[in-house]
Length: 323
Image: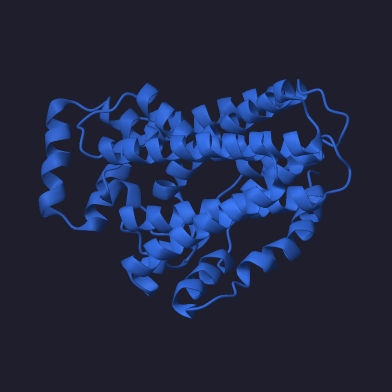
């Protein structure tokens, strides 16, 4: 039976470091309390886990630098969530009110800005210029991906090639950076660390495909956010594109007109039915599984003397997740 023993061990290692960034000091409290709130409400901590797991491919014991990197990655991820929730008008994050709902949009924006500053403080303290440069490249790509995601909402049709490129930028590059920089801190060559980046990209694409699927077909209690949010925002996900490309003109016109006259619940139910009828749901799951198989092969080809079990468990958990 497959267990998550190594991953649990890794999380315990990060717990103390997580507490340091959750217990935000500073004044005025109105800008620090929401940061503590979003860091405290959960999440899988996948990105810091991936950074440490990549480090452990080359080193047995963690050090201050890799813990600081893990903290920076987690804070940057939550910075993006603060702003994403505003742009997506999300009501829930991990089953709790989003920051801009619990407080207000101005507070959420300012908290995000402050988190970004704290990320740079952590990265600067590591003192590795290559990692700082890679971070800046990643952050730029992530912003470009977010803009493309927003632009797609105003277009009638998006190719899945364009969509996969967008999620590579918006989601996967952060996972790639986490693993690449973790490997570099562990002593990997730039060439070997690049392989870890590519693996992180593959994991990120698979992760986002599953995230898209669960946004529509998951259970609210498990997913921790409003089910069908992507449908209501008319996000051109792989799931949506597969459905749309298999509908005739009359079905497309009907859907377009429904948004102005039907309730949210009716829209979600209708679109889900069409996604099932066109096989878009199964095609999305199939593509996510194909990436998982490729990722397993990529990890097998990485030449490292350390423990691969940490990454194997992360990949296993993500491929079988329901939330």
